[in-house]
Image (cartoon, rainbow, N blue to C red; front, side, top):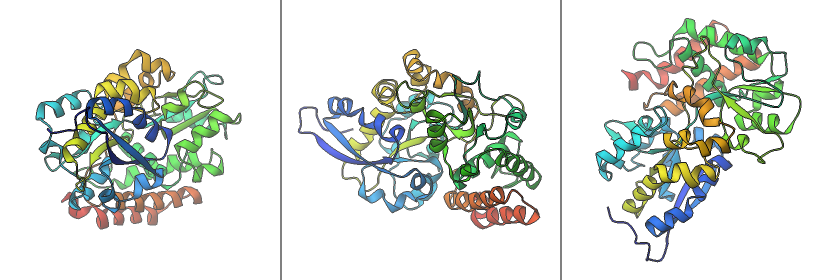
Length: 384
């Protein structure tokens, strides 16, 4: 693989990530490492968290060399020829090592049609969060959550997050979305929606417009709430001095106490098919996903790594109130959304149906029929 020599004038590549300290700061903290290894740097731009979840990669890939992406977007990006297949550039043994060092199925989630399209640089799943100065821990069971006093618990359920909780609950109930034998289990979907309606009744109304960052901000700066559930974790809030109150994270609530089925999130670094520097871009992606960066400047700089060596690091756990140690079980038992064409549009459509039911505090057969119809419209052909 041909890359720039450290003695050359630094070449600046363009990268796109998402707009939060977790999404940007860790990458920028690796600048010195990239200069030392590759004689190059990356100028990172950031898009909103909403765009990260909803926008198609092909809409912006042509303007960048490196892209931080969400794994369900891979099939549509591949179909649009927006990404380079990394296994065309990286020896199998090197990819196998990264897979071995991956947190749960984070690395595997970027595989599609026999090729690998991104490297896990960020790992996340729906977990719980609490104020350790006001609580002894997070709820273990969903029954514990429902037993908490009204308004003390927070749960973000704007449409995209409502979808994530819906998917988590279905996986925990043993009928994950888009399983080979059934795209949607109507009976289990009703059970999931019933629990979500009950939960929506117990949290403040503003949670209908909130994402996990909003909940973490409220918990870490206010005094009215103690616990947040079914939200993606952010190590930043478990770092001393980030906000006025430190937050602690723990496993996702579950029905059996085993913390299985949480929707896997996180992010991977991909290389745009439009880059003029494919070898260098791939080499930089490998460095950013490797243990040296991930357990070093990436995490200490504010990133949330996808590499297991960082999650096992005593130093990184000390920096984050044991965020990694406390949530690793959830990550290792997480449910991975399928990589199929049309998934982003399906997820967006389902999220609004579920959200409408939560805002109305009710659902009926027509809600379930809508969910079944969306599966047929967006996924039937891809999964057949």
